[in-house]
Image (cartoon, rainbow, N blue to C red; front, side, top):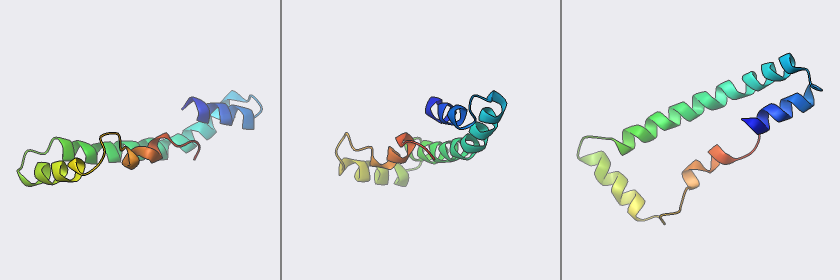
Length: 79
């Protein structure tokens, strides 16, 4: 968020209102995507049936413990 806001402040030459408008326009879509993905991951991690946890455990047992490839998009810079 800080990087995004700094970029918009620089782009708008310090015009705070315009910078925040640009920031908001960029961040709303991203934060909506983050929430959508978080809900899906929550359903996978907290499933109370028998099949989803078994599949989840099978998939993750085949990956290195430090493999976060599914979340790389979250930490990439810029839009």
